Length: 185
Image 1 (tube, rainbow, N blue to C red):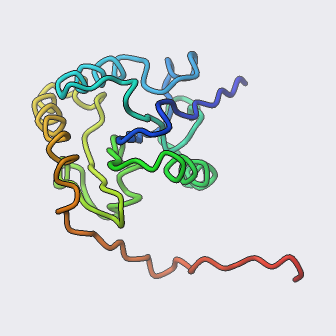
Image 2: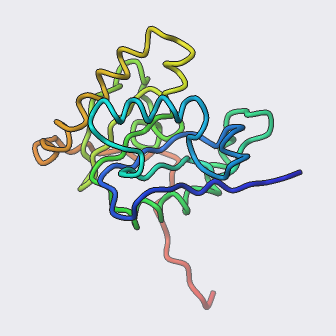
């Protein structure tokens, strides 16, 4: 079994970070995120707003393709979360665009994409903008216009970020607070 890691790519000072779900067939073969049909459409969407792929940082929630292209398991997302956290900390994007339900649920745990797409929320210094995945628009042509309209708002969102209301994510009841580990016991 061949396992290829697809960590992400883009400039280390990118204002925008896009987070997808997991590498697909083409991404697994090339070791780069979003290089298949969805990646080509993503480049078209970026061109709509005068941007190029080389200007954004793009990665996935998990870094290896799941077998049979299935949804990521929670244990896989947990294993990759420290890596994604580090990517966010190092890049320090102004805006994160989630283009997968698995990325979206990190900031919007109980929301549906159909209700919140294109609506930015501020979390501390970070603005998170949930959007449909480009592949969804390729499979459901009715979503193309919606996704294109959401993308057209990105430049305005970048300009108006300071005015967005901060969203507070409530911890789940069974989630324990982080604890400092001890070397001695």
